View 1 (cartoon, rainbow, N blue to C red):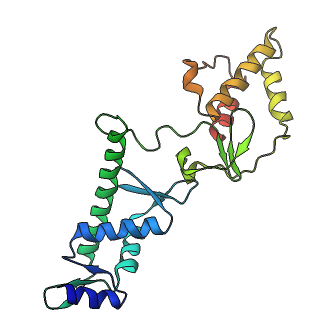
View 2 (view 1 turned 135 degrees about the vertical axis):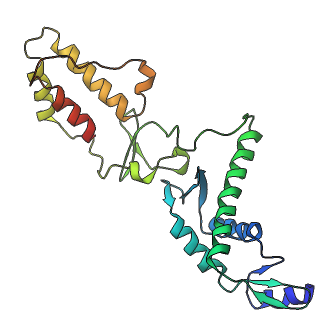
View 3 (view 1 turned 120 degrees about the horizontal axis):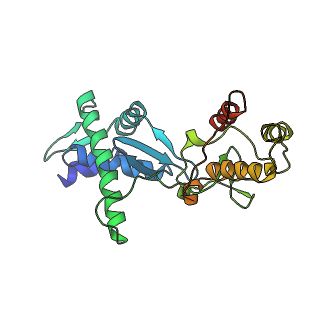
Length: 231
């Protein structure tokens, strides 16, 4: 066995002892790590980050990675070395074992820091802020690079750049038009701006309240809602 394994290793091949799903999954985990990936699982979905945002690694991509990485792998028996058969069923089993391995590691990491039971969802509490193409805008109006610890998904990043001097005259005019006949218009406008800002920065739940839009027809309610939806 030692001789056949050594011969295969000298050829640069990936050598398995038994070639089962778990052994192959460990090889894939090592490959992802060497490629600079951190991995997280949400249900049966795998997500990867190379230090910034997280993106889903689709099932088809995962299985293609398995084919590419393990093509040429061999199982070293007692007397012979045989190639791994990359059939769809085996690849499916390795893919499932990979998901299971990442899940088990997440539970171990969580419990090793004092957590009880299962860890919370990996993306339940992203860092507060507005994720843009050029970084994360924080509550203090500054921008910094997004890191993997922010737990921000790639599809939540707005396709915009940050301009700290940007103005919104039409929006401000709209708010003044809505409450043009109210003595406390400035306070209402300030509330709406703070409410929208806190929602964008992910801190609205801390306010323990929500706005009620009350008024007659064509008074701006639907326009305000459409603006919120677009954001």
